[in-house]
Image (cartoon, rainbow, N blue to C red; front, side):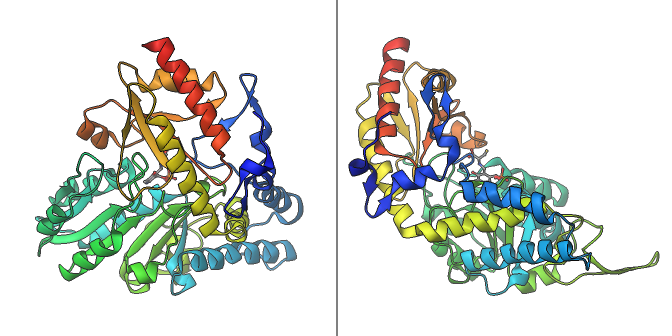
Length: 416
Ligand code: C6P
């Protein structure tokens, strides 16, 4: 793969120098330079994030909030600095509203098992959509089964957009919660969450926003959005795996029962009674993922320094370019053609199984995800077993998209 600076500097974003910050992009796969288009599954990590992990383990590895020795103080300060950075990143009102989790999945489960179990009663309704990830289906199904409540599904059109009039009709006095994905992982659709939240609040329901795919692409302001809960994962934002954030409005987090019991989430324990800790520690039982949480701040710094607006422009250019190129491949159909999309292209090719596409592309060093993308009901809605999905990040280039197109042309020749 040859790259010249003239074609890789787009709209003020120097992709060439950004790529240099990601060591993995230099590796070869099957004898070719890696083309990584599986960013919606997890993004690659810049050297600064890898260095932050090594620095913690090399210089100040210690448990946090417990010790008074120097290492413990340094580790605690670095860990809590990530909470402040995350608060700022999503514009939460206070650091007490920022709960560290293992990821989006744990954030949704935490609210389902605490708020859900406390507040959902027989006959109540929880609304989700046809494009949810399993993480935003199964926890609510569990609550509904347990409480004899009803799970309602907002339908979508063939472009992969929510049918908003249907949603508005569903809202009513029985609606207790709307849990909605802001950006679909399988389609790239950006949902109108602000409008949905306003409508849900008018009906007296709370709203959980699954921000797993949106937080890396869109500006997130939870106060303006007015969502009640918001969850995302660090590993999709150039950060480490095993760390996520659950945001919740303070009064809700205060009123909810605890999730897990153990160290850190308590103020005082006797055999008769335990007094729980204040927010945010109330929901953070046990030793957390200290190293990865600390390194997550470095990932947020990387995004801020690069500039979210620049990143977004670059990714949108890639999306537009890739869409126009892929549309020319005979037999290829894009699944998810919403007017508002992030840089995700799901596609199928006539008479070809998505998995075969994935294997043949991998043979050319190109990583895409294939399958149902943990959104089986969505695949069923489109009547397909799955798709191949190319998802773009800040370090991807048009030249890489050209490689994908060449690879797909070969796939089509070979398989049809
Ligand atoms: N989607 C994908 O390839 P975790 O695994 O907890 O970090 O994130 C779960 C999750 C929740 N909601 C949405 C919309 C998601 O996209 C994901 C993760 C990955 O699409 C892995 S299945």
